[in-house]
Image 1 (cartoon, rainbow, N blue to C red):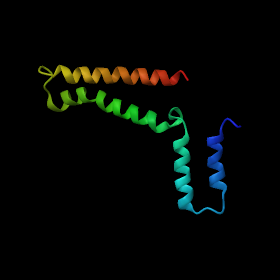
Image 2 (cartoon, helix red, strand yellow):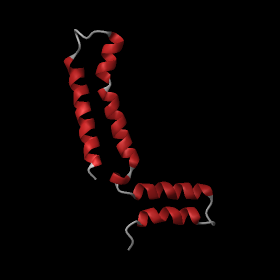
Image 3 (cartoon, rainbow, N blue to C red):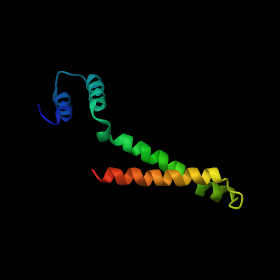
Image 4 (cartoon, helix red, strand yellow):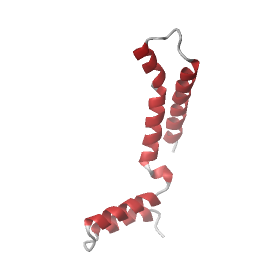
Length: 96
């Protein structure tokens, strides 16, 4: 059995002349779901986007509200933890 069987399914579905476009869309979406989570680029993007937004909460709060003296420590902790998680996630994905 070939190593890239799931990837080969894409070309089989696309090259089939007997299927209509809607059926191809449904099949391609189902084939995409068969891939392991590590190969799904949207998993990586969604994690980076969410952690980036959380990391920006503290600086944007200080910038827009201007209360750096009475800044809530919970927001600062959440933001710094998100920066650490983002750095750890990106560096772990680069090792592959």
